[in-house]
Amino acid sequence: MSYTFRRITLDDARIIATWQYDGIYSFYDANPDEADYYLNPQYHYHTILDDCGELIGYFCLGEDATVLGGTYDQSALDLGMGLRPNLTGKGLGVGVTAAVLDYVCTNFAPTAFRVTVAAFNQRALRMCAKLDFQPLAHFISAGAEPHEFVLLTRKASRDPE
Image (cartoon, rainbow, N blue to C red; front, side):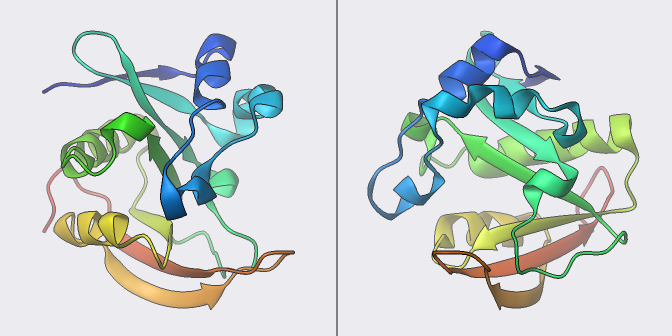
């Protein structure tokens, strides 16, 4: 399957902000009243479209891909992603993420990537391992509802080493 990417539009953001995930994954639910948040250019939100042009996910780069309480530096580009709820757990993550990494390498030229994954999200952690992300640190997020997170990194290249 091939994927295309575009800067997020307000219509895309409104759709993504309504996505509701099941069970423990409801942790990732957005607030439908805050769709304009995705339009902030400093967060580099992009939509992910499948080969039929259907909106299947999104990614962001930089500050909005970080979690309060983690230690971040300039050694890697932070990447955050989400898939449409009805597509999670179906084995698409590795292919979609590999396509995003390739796109970002081509268009943003990072030397390394860093992702922050909720420690309970074993599906995402397994996917990251398949793409050669290496655990860097664990931390507890700051804020009203602390959660454990894992920081993972990998070199930016077109093919995992």
